Image (cartoon, helix red, strand yellow):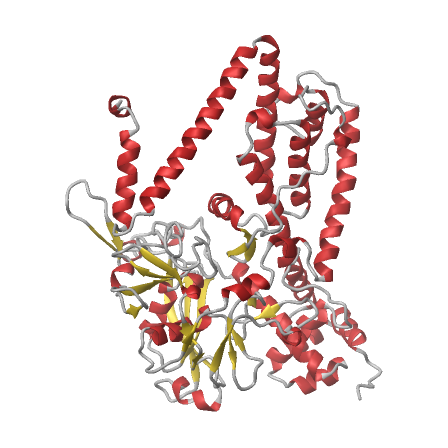
Length: 630
């Protein structure tokens, strides 16, 4: 049917390499900006050339052609000489890529803390002294389904969607929140934008996201109790079977308390049904959920599914799955709500959470409930082994490519180290890969291995361990505390990596495994094999474009300290032996402290605040009062 002599590739070459005015007329963008946009999407890993006939440039061109001219898929299919199904698939793929890329453009400038200089004059200063931007709403024309037309009719009788926008003093957009019906009040849109942290509302630099402006504080002397104004509005409204108090829903509870049902601390999503009075906590997914709901995001009822992994629902050859409500990627092994009629509409549980909570609170009348099959989740293989042995061919090729590259890099580093002089180079302020290898070759250990080539075969991962989701990544339960601390201190270390999500998840587990090993290895157990494998796996992760220079800095500082200690040991081994005894006693003491805290927190009938105070009291008791007061 598609028999035009001007193929898709020929058409793109004609438009991008010909008269720039034609490119602008067709795609509403210049050729230079079109290619730059494609490069940016590829650099951030949002859009890459697939295995078919449509490359990334053509996918973006289809998107711009449809949006710029409000045309139909059938017209685009004839222009690009592809089927309507192919056009639809790549249109959605490019649209999601642009949607994800928006967060790199529409964001506040963290360096802006005051007015621009041209506004710091007497004429404006009194009214804009602490202003960093402006908030307003706008109505954009929309074409909703027939049954939602009235909800989208605004006060001027036009069919629109209500969009909240924030811009800085240079008229640059820093936040956009859309999706609300035209009949929605501006205050309702604003309230929803600031109450849900997933929207990323740009709070002022001096404000905390957890307590942006206001909180209630205890007026009793020396009491630092604070209650966020948003938390003050939370009221117990959920009845839980077998419990005498009503529960409150929390999207996140500090320190991830242990769930009374599954006995685990971490879950995805990290939401809880909580009785604050008894400190009784249950993961949302461990409680009974409504079997069927009706939500505004879809015209038909949605049924609860333990998981949905139909390969036909993958929108493209990348093997990724998407939520049809928010257009974000989803894990095919997560429980979802799926359309009972058309069967191909799937929504995250977070996207329909409002309706789920109304059903749990018994505000939707008689509703049938059931529990998500947690055993089925385990049978689906949520272990580290499935992350390290992916079935996706693209992930396998990406990981193999990094492995090959790092093998060549290690051989190059070792060759350079061969021609270096020993000396005291490791005591320089700046250490390098070559000096680290030189250290491994020349320092004396008790492991009887003199060659680095023999130091291989160590792994730092329990492949049978269960995995949980932290942000967008699935990691071993053992690594969750480490990863959360890394994210808090260094941000997303994988953000600059162009690899797909599955491959980045694998490298993230490798990195956390090495850090976990370093945190749990005693000094007396350090040997050449261990040090080389730490370094080698760090280089593997760094080759994947992870920002982990801080890890190498720590490893190099440790090597410098170790070589000085080993030199001292040759002169005076008593100092070294005493340190080993101190390490053993410290480990035993830390273990007893952990057992004591676990015992205190396992007590029933006490609130979390009472338990925290009791833990602090015992810590104070274990110290010398006079010394602590100095």
